[in-house]
Amino acid sequence: MKELLEHLFAQNVLTRTQAKTVLNEIAEGVYDPAQVSAFLSVFRMRPIEVSELQGFKDCLKERCVQVDLQEYDPVDLCGTGGDAKNTFNISTLASFVVAGAGCKVAKHGNYGVSSACGSSNVMEYLGFSFSNNSDRLKKQIEQSNICFLHAPLFHPAMKQVAPIRRSLGIRTFFNMLGPMVNPSSPNKQLVGVFSHEVQRYYKYIYEQQENLEYRIVHSFDGYDEVSLTSQVKVVAPKAELLLKPEDFNSKFLSAEELKGGSTIHDAAKVFIQVLSGNGTEAQSAVVLANAALAIQCCYPQKELKEAQSMAHDSLFGGRAEQAFKKLMNP
Figure 1 (cartoon, rainbow, N blue to C red):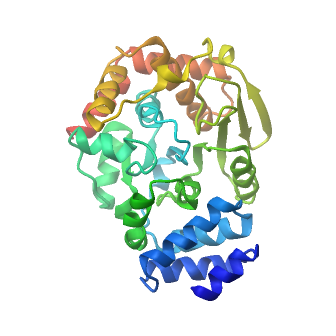
Figure 2: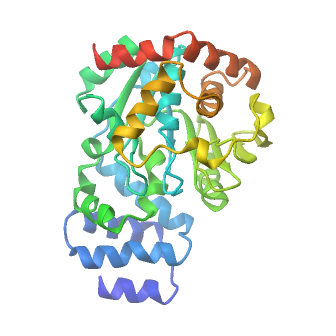
């Protein structure tokens, strides 16, 4: 590792093969935590390169426990996290809205690293039991239109890294990888990213894949989702759009209106309120905006307004909450 760190500290870049190799070695426990911490820190001191991101992705995809859900053609709603905004669980709530709208969802999620409560934290707090059993996941998606893929169960290779990430408490390149390494390899995905730079990386990598219907979103003020606190850039297979809150039938929101609280209990309380249709106007609006774009991934021919209508009917017609209850109580 010493030679590799010297190589990186000299402003050199890893090839795709080198990146894959070193992450494999980290996964095998070859290096001690201090060395791994130093390695992770490199990519906060300079931008990651596409070759490095692809190599890391190759490693995780190769080593993950894969689950075949292609018969359901699900969509995933997954953000990179790491935007340090500490919002409530927007993408997780939007996932249930999308499921309530009739789309199949394979939600990839994890514990929070740079926020108080990640999607796995809130699901676990509410009593959900994670599984990587294929039959169980298929039963969930058949009964409730959604299954939850808890990342640590599918990426055992990262067991060595998880405590180091928690200790660091900062964004690392693993945040960038999360949406790319969904173990079900969905062909439909709403991806939220924390910077325009990462959005460009995703665009380049996703363009290389065939039959992928995606929306890569980044709000101008740093959110890894449609926040409605600013304009948002949306990258789709054949278009790049700049959308304003009014395009989602909303006014500009404040950052304070999107806060998830300081504890998992706070986040869970917001989660249940929004899911039951009793969230604030701002909370509901931001969930519906993200759900609408995910619905568009499932039905690319639908206009945004129609997708918004489907999302609205799912949330306020009780179908999103019903999908949640069916998942929790099969």
